[in-house]
Image (cartoon, rainbow, N blue to C red; front, side):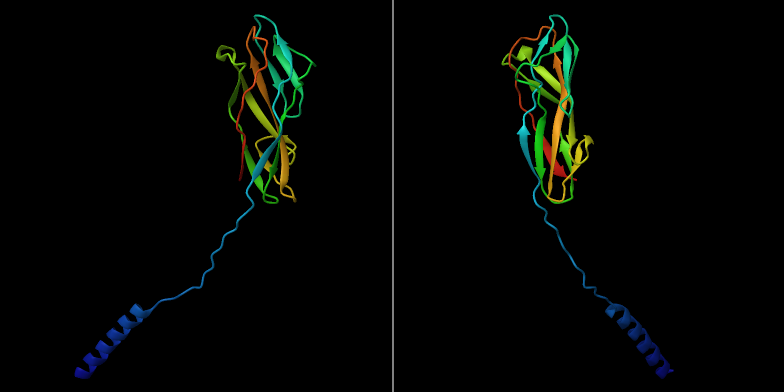
Length: 175
């Protein structure tokens, strides 16, 4: 009986020892990838061109992302200088990566008299890589792309004759 208890105790101790000492190790890898910073450069400023507005008749001047201009309401378009131009940009960065464009919801342009400010809304972008209006593009095999911006200028009835200007931010970021 004494021999049985010793053997039984040895089996129990051996079982606990196996469980306590059981472990495994895996050699694992870690990594990171750094890409070139994305860049944006303006090559042309947004300008809706020259126009006149009929007294008492508000309207809009719409500039498409491809440079086509149209008017509604009392706005009459003119071919005088300055002429209409899309905002245009070049984008650079990591080859074959997609990026997103962030545009403001509105832009304010002023002639220096706040009561006469006009707003620009409905901003759209058109990338060369997508060849369609949208807010994403893809950098080509050289890590480059371009895009243009158009929108809608809201003109009040009897808007004062003057030169109007304003600024806005355009942001690009990797997807």
